[in-house]
Image (cartoon, rainbow over all chains, first blue to last red; front, side, top):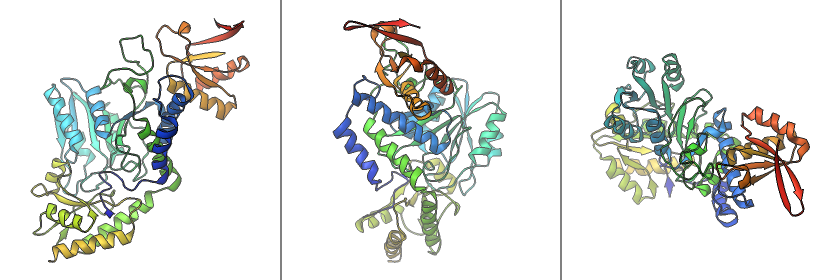
Length: 370
Length: 83
């Protein structure tokens, strides 16, 4: 099997990630923040160590304000519904994933107003196009760092500067960039990211970072193992967002994934394999590759005269895993001009070799040249 | 001595920082129910002589220590005296 769907979830995982899950389930097993017997404390310490390692990776000044969710989507929902009130305005871009688009739409159902900044045909969002949409009612700017369709990387730091100038909150969706390109989140307001993509953890993990000083309500209410006599949620992090039992085996795995990235310095290898894929695809005459050469690992294409779903089906018969369709990002496909049939997305990962790309593209060419 | 904190997360941060920076060993325990009105709290247990270091460490981490309690052993019972 040649796995080229790392933009959906990375595979394979580092050995330490796999061991972390089995070790947790066979040697620890306890719920973090519940009880003070040794294994419960060990479980809590894993969670704490994971926050510390993520904070190191992204230069986050307050690790305790990194909270665990089941995925980036939950983190995005928590950020939007925790800060935006009826009457507020949200600005998003036309490259957003449905995790942002649908939750922002729901916010409009609840009385907020949505504005969309249109990206260029390469998927790049001009920060000034966001600034033009700002009004005195704008509460939140929510922007994808890197597209899950075209891999296009947005200039989030310029958007952050604009937002700070206007005293507006920002939420950056780092789902496609966390663990793939270096990120300095030290000045971010809020950031949401997956644990199972570039950070190499398992599915069922994600995170939301909320800067100190931001007032936010939790998405879930329930037991936290702290302040149990109170009917209210604790007002401190991470407990404010940790209602219910956490995915401790997944967090143990995520911790090892983050340590792997810190140790191995994966960025250049990922960038190199993505460039190799991009350049190889650009050399096929009937293929169009939306986006720019410098990107994260999503490389979507269209092949003249072919339905991407047909090609994905044929590649699957050869043991090659790619994803076709709209990738849960219809706005992005409208922007890129690929809404009609969607695209075929190849997304390599840290463990993808050039030989894998060569084999996959040989099969791809055979299909489109039949 | 016990230092009571809001959460197990704060207790972990304090414990690790105390060990790494001050080389002071400590242990996390569940706060005895007689010492907390809120229920389900956590405390850090350490030798009395390290109280000032624990205070400094907590200040560096901006962790709020709710109270310090000195332990007094009387037979097979432990009494906690608020400092």
